[in-house]
Every structure is written in structure tokens, then in C-alpha cells.
Length: 224
Image (cartoon, rainbow, N blue to C red; front, side, top):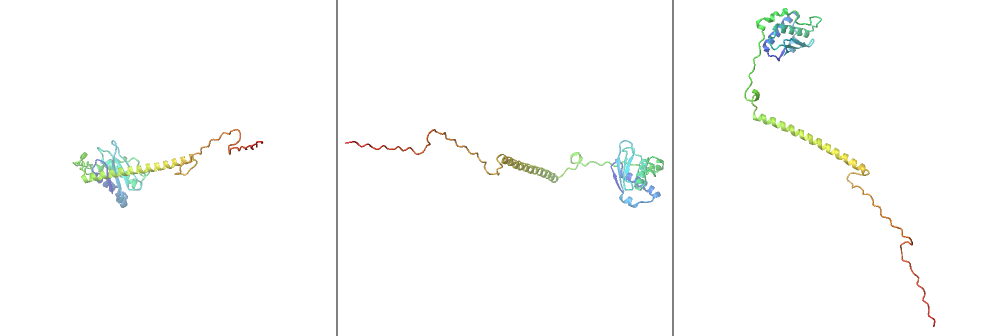
């Protein structure tokens, strides 16, 4: 079985209490080797002095929430047995919904060997910020390189997006201009409108052309 402990209590104390509770139940109902192989029990903190738990019916997962201060081993044992009973297939029709009923049957958990101990506080490492170990120069350079690479990738993506938008806008502009100038093809110069020639004013009389020939009068002969 796997124990996940997220409380200030020592995992060793919680495991000892859990194993004793499961063995007590198995003496009456029989062992479940499959449950012991796949069981996952999670211990969490709760607000105030409350004891709650959840589990999967006929499953192998249990989650219990216990107080940070003054946690009572007998109440934790009763809660664990209640959730373990659900894992073994029991429902609230077969057992009371309130696990605190019959708490006297768990007086054995008040013995000294089941007393909960606090987990030792680990000392913070020195050398870096907030007690963390100082990073090596090679690691810092690698992290900085990754950051710069990500920035370059973002900038390249922005450039590609802007280029695509510019090309799209240019195509749209050309199509609009072609519609305005009679759907001309892109690249050819626009046709300039023809200028009308000024009309000649009509002069009364004959039309201009060849000059009028004047007939010469015959010469008169002198009489002798």
C-alpha cells in the first residue's frame, strides 16, 4: 500500500495506525491481497478539529482529513476503518453513516505505541535565495539561453503574422483598384481618357479649297 502524507504528523506513526486498523478488520472479514497491492491512502489537513474522509466504493483509494493539532488516534482509526469498509464493498445500509458511533471499540488506538508523532522539520539549505542551493553558472547560462530562444521564436511568429497580413491587405487593395478602373489587370497602366478635338466654326459662304479661277477677258482689237 502507498501512503501520501501532507500533514505535519510523521508518516511512520500514520502507517502504524493504518496497518493496525486494516489487520483488525481483516481478522473478521478476511484479507484482500489485491487491495494491499493497489491501495493508496492520502492524509490531508483539515480546518479546525474536524475528521472527514472519502473513498471509492469497492476500490482501493482513501482520502482522510485530520486536524493539524491534537489529532486523536482512536478517531483516525475509526475513520480509516469506515472508509476501508467501503473499499471492501460495505454501504451505509450495512453500517452506520456516522463513523463516531461505537468509538469505544477503538480504545486500543489510545495506547502509547500508537501515539502520533510530529514529522521532523527539515533544515533549509544555505547558499541561495530563501535558503536554496546556489545554481551553477552553467545552469544559469542554459536557463538564460532557453529564455532568449523562446523570445526569438515569439518574435519570428509575430513577423510571419504581420507579413501575411500585409500581403493579404495588398491583394485586397489591388482588387479594389481594378474594380474602380474597369477591372484592369494588375501591372498594366491605366488607360487615359481621350481628349475631344475642338470643333471648327462654320464660315458662311463657300467652303475653303482651291482658289477661284478668274476668266481672262479677250483683248479687243483696235480698228485701223
